[in-house]
Image (tube, rainbow, N blue to C red; front, side, top):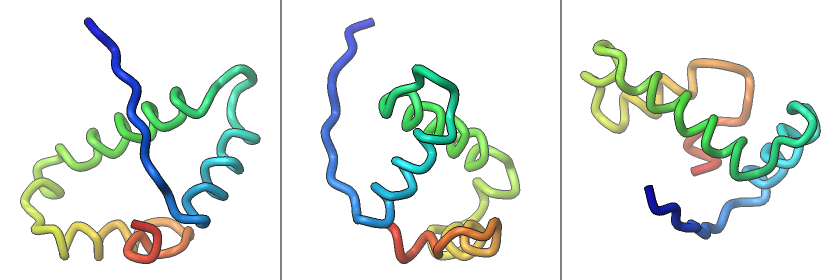
Length: 76
């Protein structure tokens, strides 16, 4: 497997959440590992049959109704 770097920009809220998550994560876990884990968890969530059947707007509403963080639509 050939690995490639990906660079992206994020909002201040996203960066703050990332930095907080890094502080609370296991020692030695870096930004790349944290983002990869988050992506894997999101994909596992999205692949559930009842979630995969949602359209984009329903998916955003479903994510917004889960958890206590700032609204997904405000951070995307």
